[in-house]
Length: 257
Ligand code: NAD
Image (tube, rainbow, N blue to C red; front, side, top):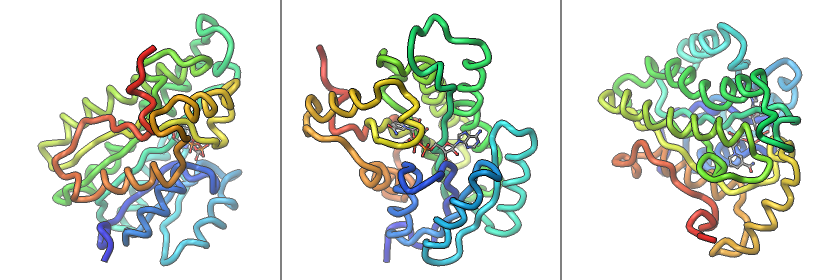
């Protein structure tokens, strides 16, 4: 019996097989969880539906674009009636305009700033609010995905670094807010992984190279490294951990100059 046996988890952020959320889905399934997924919009429906069909068992699937008014409410209302109570929520979504992920940070536009914050940081609050009624009495766990650029300046990460700082801070405020109801909230700060979103960051290849050369483990991390840690945080093994950012980065973040 796996450590997630009998647990129901909703994952936001599967776009394709490279998505970190897909690695998390694999690890959760291996440990016996039942999954619900979203797809962002009509354009992505077919590919996510095909991926879902590869998964064992029945997977709940419904649309949710966190920037579309009413989408979050609709998603959770359908989830509540068709999937039932919830033990876990994974927030693995982010977006910034490509032109804001390179060049000078001082050129960040208000539009680009708002969009990055809306999709990448506020959405954690919106999704947690949607999930809370379904987690009542279940000792739920919420996990989101961050990056080192939240706390240190990483070349070209720009507006997304500021959004990740807001995400990590929101994670801590949420942890304090929902803790008395038995719900935990944590972030995983993952090292760079080649995904569609990551490729939007100018010169992303040099982040991968730098990490493989300098990190204590002298390697990059992969989706399953993150998936396994997310599964631990979603499981009862982590029942004393909340409000934390856990690094899955081959140790890179401990390095000084
Ligand atoms: P990805 O492109 O596979 O996933 C990003 C997801 O965000 C997609 O599923 C996309 O549909 C979703 N999304 C974007 N805008 C949305 C919206 N308006 N509404 C709903 N969903 C929306 O990329 P990924 O690298 O797997 O990213 C997952 C998470 O991991 C993100 O938070 C990202 O910042 C974080 N992260 C990635 C890396 C990396 O190097 N890949 C490192 C650390 C953290």
